[in-house]
Length: 272
Image 1 (cartoon, helix red, strand yellow):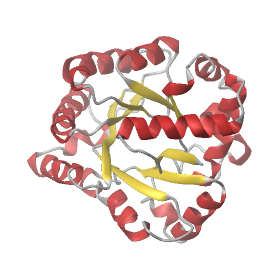
Image 2 (tube, rainbow, N blue to C red):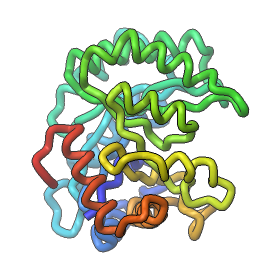
Image 3 (cartoon, rainbow, N blue to C red):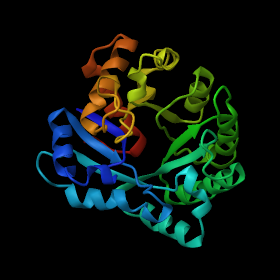
Image 4 (tube, one colour):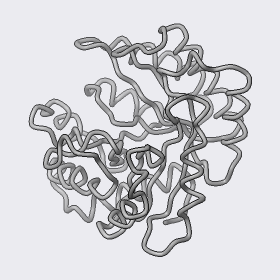
């Protein structure tokens, strides 16, 4: 079975067929999905938990987990009320991670200073709740600026926790992957790994050890090459896993087993 380690199941794009979409995932061999709780605004970070509670326990649907966090673009919305809500959500048993959080210097929906402050404040809460983090990092084209600031913050505020996390939808180079592993993070690849122009990303993936990898969809975005332009969904994580298997020279079943083991290890689970 595969695990989709990052999908926005509360997206309004699923409002008409959310249950059917989840059933397709199960039929495609997806045993669990980590639903990402960032909402359209910071106040909506509880949406993923609501989806988990609605669908968990139903036959023919993957096990659902949730996260909660404030996306970089929304960090200007952070105040004591938002941080209090994040703290409460991270205390819920289904909410196993804080995220996605991080830095985005490509779009810069909030100033860099606000993003860095917001990230640091969320790291404090995640550490107190002993929850791993899900990192979004996107630099300006042709630079590594966001990565450099990110690693500086993680070295100061996160390394000593030993909690690790996931570099979601990884898009950096080998140096960023290497530093991520040194900080105790897993590296997760999404559908863009399958794109014809993503050879540089595939070259990075091919160098990573099996025990450092995860796969994800980032659904409803980043559908794999065969469905590019369509609404993505967790069932299609198998295509990313297949490409990753080819890069590493292993069977698809080995990728499924390894990424599931890695997910369970990070979150302290014995199995799905």
